[in-house]
Length: 216
Image 1 (cartoon, one colour):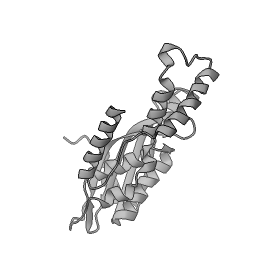
Image 2: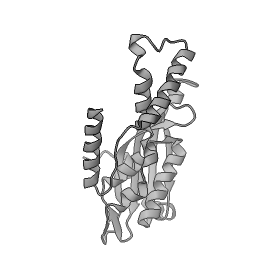
Image 3: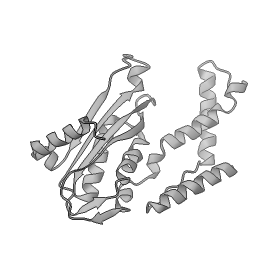
Image 4: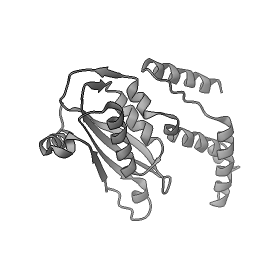
């Protein structure tokens, strides 16, 4: 418990410096409730949850699940608002290769990959670290990749009111690799655009070229 309190304090301090507060803390009641269910699940699949290797597994899984879905406790628009600045810059701002880790809501299996996010400012820019934080805030929920893509786009568009937003996400889905069709090398790509990225083919092409390139 002391280690957990220390970890929570450290996380709070780190995020307070970014202008908003996020506290990583496990809810004891939820952990107990989820753990009891996983204890029964282990029995249902033919395991002995009381054997040495599994004694703490229900609790570990409960804590992992609570962490993997902590995005429900975050407000992505507030993350952006915590570092918005007036700036007369009207060219594309791109943050690419943002790591994505999420959970498929259909099978509760992971999907993971990269997100590429761009926007064209309209008098306001945002601290660059906030864009990956917004991606993570939505990804750390039960998701489908299509909705995740749209949620990131809409949050940036609604909060910053830029001239356009572009989001492309490329992920591998364990529900396709480990079960079902079992195609280990398949990658799912989704995209969502607003404004200039829809109406201006040249701008959209520039974005696609930039995310495909390997700039040093």
